[in-house]
Image (cartoon, rainbow, N blue to C red):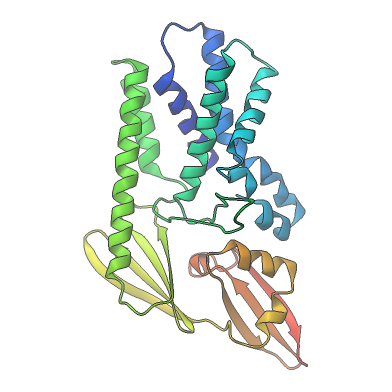
Length: 292
């Protein structure tokens, strides 16, 4: 998810649980704990300045792990305590921990891989049922903000969480139905929710090719394009010795390769097939492999 949505979800967590008889400073402390907890897993974003290898190795890694979430919540609470200690530590910590977990779950719901079990499991997992920027969730939160003028804030945001849960469940069901409509016989499949709700792109790995299907809740799937996967080419293992290419192969649920032959070398592109049609340069690394 984008950072605006993460922060708003953290505030929604605080608003749904905070009693109304708190002082302004207490409310600020609890709200800050929840919001910073909902943002702090992205503390590793500074690695973008260290190059693609570092970024893809650390992005959504251990800071997004359920196993490491208690430490991230403690760090968030420590930041809040530098400016405001007008809160009960246990309650503030639970809000920070809830914010961290909401962040992890919301990231898990979209297409980018998330290391939810690091360091025990280095795999990156994604459900692909929500887009990274989800206008429906933003509208639900905005509605709760407006409704709080006519009902209690806690009640308004509790109903918002119910609505978000129902919407997410519906998207998950529709994504499962979309995958079920794809003809059998594929090796791997990945789902990518589109900006418009109920629409999905399904990427299927079938033998030595990728198939791109467009589906909606109200129409049968349509194959948009098929591209050849050159992973079996002998130059690909050598290309994967490149640190950036190796990082992409690790980050993607399954990677693809495109090989172009030149006079004295092969140009091997390692890519994440989920972004190949939309933004070919995203999560893509080209390596020149000399001919032997």
